[in-house]
Length: 107
Image (tube, rainbow, N blue to C red; front, side, top):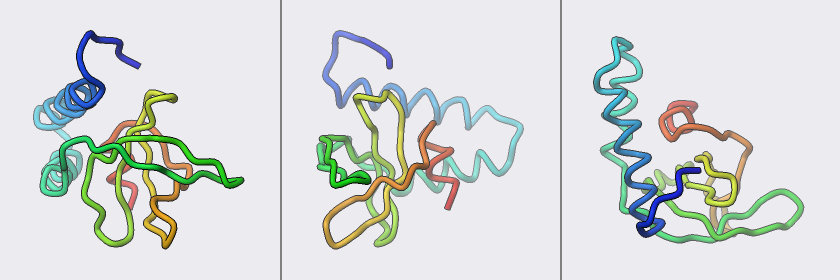
């Protein structure tokens, strides 16, 4: 995880901006399209509680608006992004982890 002397939300924005800048310069048309689609659902990092297997919960940061089925969140303890499924009990981690665009593009 990048350690900067800024707020957690700002650190997450820096990670996302870097990833999106790299995608925009990529020769991969699918990655560029995924980045454009992600930007349309991106939201300011907002703290949320995420549910994990075994009844565990953790404070994380939502970085995309939920589409009714999925949303991308940042897991600060792990230092990477996760794809979560929307449930009656809130976002549920489904084990898809890594870069934000990789998680987002997996659905």
